[in-house]
Length: 324
Image 1 (cartoon, rainbow, N blue to C red):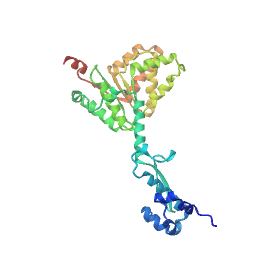
Image 2: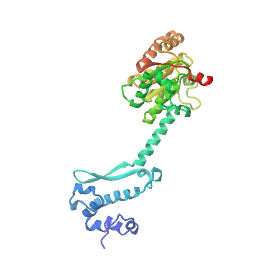
Image 3: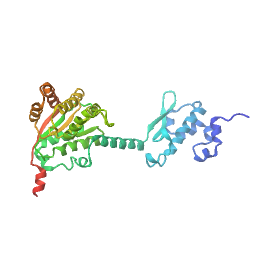
Image 4: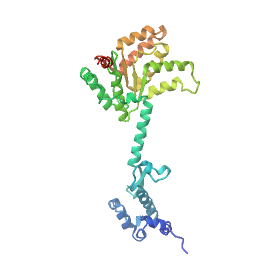
């Protein structure tokens, strides 16, 4: 008795016949059969001799995979197993015949995009309050008083791409003029565009870095170098309320390390401060020891090189709210 061919063996399986994608016609007229199943094969117009058993097995696998995707409602409902989950097989036409192509389905791409956005939010350091600060609810009065700055912020948030030669922003002004709101609006828009952003509050961040100096490699905490590497490598770094930290040798060294590390690749920073660049430089220089004055001067130089500086004008909106 002749040993059945692979296809002949499969055709004897009742379950396979019930699925509707194993048909005796596949053995009798494989070219006609497969061109009816996959109209794209008519374009290739391959000779009948090309449709061997091995080719039919390959096409059966693609058809089986396609049927599994019918009626799919989302990645979580994908019936495929392990590495095949979220992937689709399709026919690729080559000069010599056909090949199997594997691509991510639309639901899997959507799932990956949602995962990426979740990771970006988790990495960003933004809390729920920060996430509510958007361009849409930015104070109209501040838009009117600071039109050029707001336009520049909007442009940066909507156009910046990692690796682009584009400067960040240094936004300074009195308390309560919505500087942090504008910085957060930039971050929220960047994250929605899948750009990596990291937010740090200057006072808390540099205090924590100073504390780690005395607790290096203890308590399972990350080292200062690991934290600084994260600040250096992120696509866009936002430093809020710069100048309010305890200015000392440790904070000067940390800020210099961050800016110095970001400068070669022109990775932009967005900074808010109550101090103008000149006031900030004086604040740092007055508190720097003699041996770090040169590093302090370099720090300010890099800050100015990486940003465009704008003063935020307007009244303290917190005071206005209290007076109403």
